[in-house]
Image (cartoon, rainbow, N blue to C red):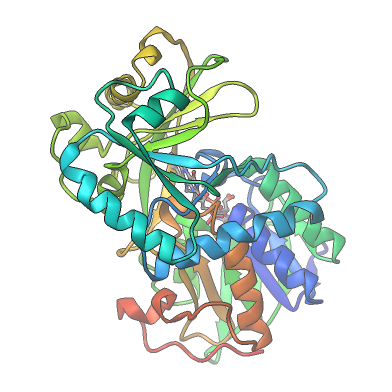
Length: 398
Ligand SMILES: Cc1cc2nc3c(=O)[nH]c(=O)nc-3n(C[C@H](O)[C@H](O)[C@H](O)COP(=O)(O)OP(=O)(O)OC[C@H]3O[C@@H](n4cnc5c(N)ncnc54)[C@H](O)[C@@H]3O)c2cc1C
C-alpha cells in the first residue's frame, strides 16, 4: 500500500462476506480496496462448517433469502480461480421425537411451496439409505439442493476474483480509524497508510461494532460461540450432511425437551458434515461467551454425546481436533445489509450461522444498493433502522 491510496469503495474484512462484497462491486467496475487485518478467512469464516442451506429457517422471508443465496453458488463457482468444493448433495433434518412430526410435515409443505426441493423420508426409507442411523430416529426431512463447500477456498477465490476485476487487496492491514467530516465519510486510516474514499462497507463480522463506532454508528452484533469436533477419516459411517430437527430451536434460543441440562446450557444441537478430505465435522453449540475461541471440554463432550444419539457408531471414532468460532449475531439473528445515518458508511454483517451460505447474495445486494438498482429481494427486514439505535439511515447513494 502507498501511504495515500484512493478508492471508490473500501471494503473492510476479508471473510466470506467481505470478499463476496468486494468481488461483486469490482465486477461492476467500481475501484475497490479490500482491507483485511490478517489473511483471507482470518476470522469466523475459517472456524465454521461449510453449509450453504435452506433447512435452518422456517418458511418465510429469511427462508427465501437463504434459497437465493444458495442458488448463486453454481453461477459463481466457475468464475472463481480455485475449486470451492461446492457439493449440492443435500442435507437431512433428523426427527427423533414423534411429537414433532406434525410441525415437520407443515415445514415440508411450506418449503415445497417456496420452491425448495424437499422430500420426507419415513423411518424405513431413512434406514435403507443410512444404515448407521439410530433406531429412535423416526423420519428425515431432506433438503435435496442444500450444499456444502470449503469456506476458506471461497474467501480466497472471491478475493482473487475481485483482484481480477481491478480491486486492490490489502492483507496484514488493520483499519485503525474511519474518519467522518461534516457528517460524511472522508477516509479510512490503516496501519499501512490512508485510503481517501466516499464509501466504506463494514464486513467485519463480530468486529463490525468496533469499526462502526469509529464512524459514530452503533451496530448491535454479539459473538455467539460455536464448537466443532473433527473426526479421523471415516468411510461409510454417514453418507451426507445431517442436522437434528432440534437445531432450529437451539438456533432460535428456544427451550427444548428431551435433551440434557448440558446440551440446553451450551445450546448443543447435532449437525454433521462429511468433508472432502474424508474427515467428518461434528457440531455444534451456541453460547455467548465474549470473544473466547478456546474449545471447552465440557461442550465437546456434550457435542460428542449428541452425535452418538443420532449415529451410535460415532462412539467408536477418534476425534483428531476441535475448534471454536464466533457467529456474528444481531438481536434477531438476521444480517444487517444497510446504509447508515452517516453518508457513505454501509454495513454488511451479522449473518450468525449463515454467513457462508449468504455471502454471495449479500455481495449481490450491496452491489445493487451502491449502484442504485432495484434489490433482488426487499431489504427492509435487513435494514439497520429496525433496531432503533441510531438516527434514521440516509438513502443509499449510487
Ligand atoms: C461453529 C460454527 C459453524 C458455522 N457453520 C456455518 C455453516 O455451515 N454455514 C454458514 O453459512 N455459516 C456458518 N457459520 C457462520 C459463519 O462462520 C459466519 O456467519 C461467517 O463466517 C461470517 O463471515 P464474515 O465475513 O461476516 O466475518 P469473518 O469471517 O469473521 O470476517 C471478518 C474479517 O474482518 C477482519 N477484521 C476485523 N477487524 C478488522 C480491522 N480493524 N481491520 C481490517 N480487518 C478487520 C477479520 O480479521 C476477519 O477476517 C458457522 C459459525 C460457527 C461458529
